[in-house]
Length: 490
Ligand SMILES: Cc1cc2nc3c(=O)[nH]c(=O)nc-3n(C[C@H](O)[C@H](O)[C@H](O)COP(=O)(O)OP(=O)(O)OC[C@H]3O[C@@H](n4cnc5c(N)ncnc54)[C@H](O)[C@@H]3O)c2cc1C
Image (cartoon, rainbow, N blue to C red; front, side, top):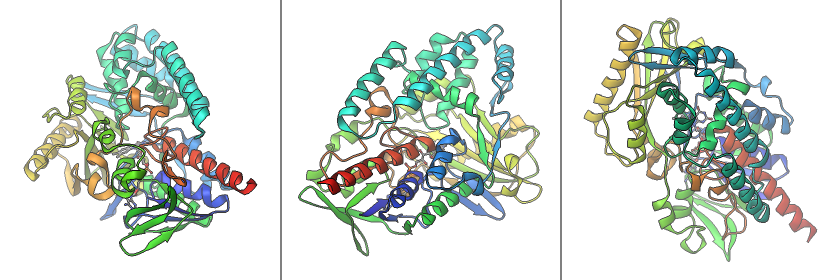
């Protein structure tokens, strides 16, 4: 079978590799000059910056992908375990969240004496949520099972009171405001706003403490290159600088896709790009699963400003690899992001990747990447961008106690997500996770109107993050295999 995958992010690469391994003839069409999608990267003057993900979580999902394709991830790249996993920096000082739970309990005790019991209880809840997540919520695309699963999941979440907001859940479970804020920064790192997010996402806590937080040697660029190599080894054809402008459909059946230059015939098409863009711009009106109003009223996660700084000198004595700069206005910041209101309230994530891997910066220098979550749909002129840059630098300098000697810098405004990835609303993290858009409630992996059209990636089930989008690729590869076996039997 001939299959075209639109988009070469993590989901597209994984889906293409799995489908090619099944014996299909698979081509990826990627609009940009290199694959990787949101796991974009930038190299200049000896610095290598990750522009997207930096938290390597649930590593077994990627290891399983390599194994399933007859390869071993360890032959492609190494991982270093981070300890501390991250540092929370406030105007009053900093707290480290250590890799070991016992060590972290000491931190929590210092923040609020007597809090160990509450946090330990939370880890138990988190493990339960993680179990529901891992064992049951990996929808296999079958409609009737999907309904059963949805009911099962809903009942489980209700039973354990995990359908209210993540913020509300922590507020009820913890007395200490400081610990609550700290734990809210975990999903926010993945663009998951705690005031929108269902409490169920507390499972990230178990993922961090039980599986660990890792960093790939060579940065996420190395992971992207490895997945590309893996896909090529399975026989996938990867064509970059190919911008798909139309999905061709005849009498409800997929026929292929068209780019500016060419038409590609295909028996199946897998959209591994923005769901809303595919539906509203590439699929003809009568074949759309959702009306335009669905996307207009859907909740989207925030956009972001990315700042890459190449700094002379070593910052490792005052920063960890992952640092979260927050203050007492954290909750207000989350609310403003949700309500898409402009704010001077600056809270951000700073990654010193060269501390995990020296090769990412020239000798004697540091590679510092900042992600500043920002409401979608906000106007951003150069003066505002420069004010925000200054505010970020001042906060970092105040903490490190010296001026940053910046020898290289690059700033990506919020519009980067729209222009580079065709992201709806220029959202960095895609469709938000809310109770009605969470895991099994997200748009389906299979078109309801077009035979042979599938969806993978962060906007579909199960959602945002590298392990999730790889899971969506597996779901679709299994579904395509099942339907081609079925067609062969007939
Ligand atoms: C700043 C940031 C930090 C993050 N941090 C983490 C983290 O630490 N850990 C984690 O697990 N996750 C993190 N995430 C989330 C994670 O990166 C994403 O969920 C995941 O990479 C999305 O992969 P995808 O394949 O669904 O989509 P994408 O990566 O967006 O891939 C879609 C691809 O489709 C291409 N495309 C679009 N339109 C067309 C077209 N018309 N024709 C052809 N190609 C097209 C795009 O160029 C792109 O390459 C982060 C995301 C961001 C933005």
